[in-house]
Image (tube, rainbow, N blue to C red; front, side):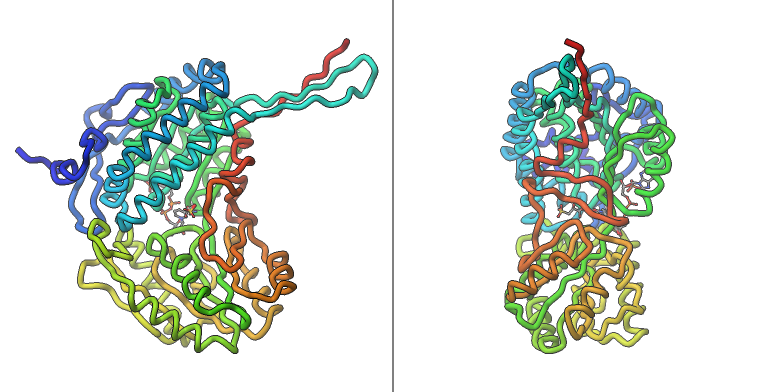
Length: 492
Ligand SMILES: NC(=O)C1=CN([C@@H]2O[C@H](COP(=O)(O)OP(=O)(O)OC[C@H]3O[C@@H](n4cnc5c(N)ncnc54)[C@H](OP(=O)(O)O)[C@@H]3O)[C@@H](O)[C@H]2O)C=CC1
Ligand SMILES: O=C(O)[C@H](O)CS(=O)(=O)O
């Protein structure tokens, strides 16, 4: 008899990558008592998988296995760990299509974006495989004739990660890869909406030679329970989280009891600024990719679009024309630019920000309504006349809603752009060199796109300031969060 997985499995070259088990200590297990939760396709609403709903006892078993296997993994040379990570990268790319189909099925993004995300996640694995060979210590000239000083870098031990649904592959790769490269072991708890990508990645990691216990994936509906186990279990020495600032605060409070090392990639409220000397066509393309990638469901999306008065109308017209050409649809269907939002509450957030803006004087230029395809689809929307009194000026929309704010001059827009508790990404378009230097220095953000709307890459330090997070992921800096520094003073 056909079951709920049949249709999706039939789309895969490797149907065994559609996994309904959790990976705990090298074993693929069901939950105690067979408890499961459904994974649904946000475009169609159908159940595509049922995965184990683990409890804290099973999560603790994964942590125990990580603790038991970590020292042997750390004892391998960086070169040996690099070889395993390279193989994992190669397997992810070899199975890019299957991983992309699984991602679109569970998250909804267009297949082309899913393919891109798989390559992006694999790039982090490749990058940190290379970094595994470059964990350098240092020697320091002694402070006394009979003293010798060295500094060692050693893996922190067991790391635990909680990741969101919006990038179900890359957010895991961006954490697991540096951890394994450093010699740590890792327990991953993916978002309940999108566990399939993580489980498939774990299968390929196993095939690449990651030893049993070094990388576990614990699926559970009890996000809070998983977070508490990670923060309270004395075997865990590192917590890494990507998600909302609200949940980040909860985890930081919980982690404080063990003074646990934390990395936090949290919410954003990115300003996208178009000065009157900008290349308007380039700015429109940058706004499209920054605002509508993943249907606006990224922490680095343009959330507020500021346009200088002299080019406001021209920019608005061009942007509306470009947005009008975007196709809303099922991510698995060719030609789709914008899939469904992840769940009904995400559509409700878009409607809330739209209705609030209109009530406070904004005008809908395009969109502003749902889509006949279903309740989780929403038309890409632009409003003009946005002001700082509106909710969208202070809160992350996380959807296809583009408010255009008009500004007078540089000082005006810098003040508005920085008037937020967030500080993750920002973007601006200008061609005057002095202005570019002044503005990039004045914006209070961890990442700045200058004449570009897409900045994410494994070679650069990704992260925010203020309440957008702690630490950096990617680049040569990203591995430091999984290392401890040890100072050795030797009497000679
Ligand atoms: N910085 C970023 O990249 C992201 C930012 N966001 C922001 O967060 C908002 C809400 O999105 P949402 O997905 O709900 O983000 P959340 O922060 O609520 O969820 C992110 C992850 O944290 C888990 N989680 C939720 N509550 C807890 C808890 N108490 N302890 C431990 N883990 C927990 C979630 O589990 P589960 O989903 O299973 O409940 C999920 O895996 C978005 O609108 C956006 O503003 C969201 C995603 C990514
Ligand atoms: O969490 C996110 O939104 C991602 O970090 C954005 S990106 O790294 O894919 O740009």
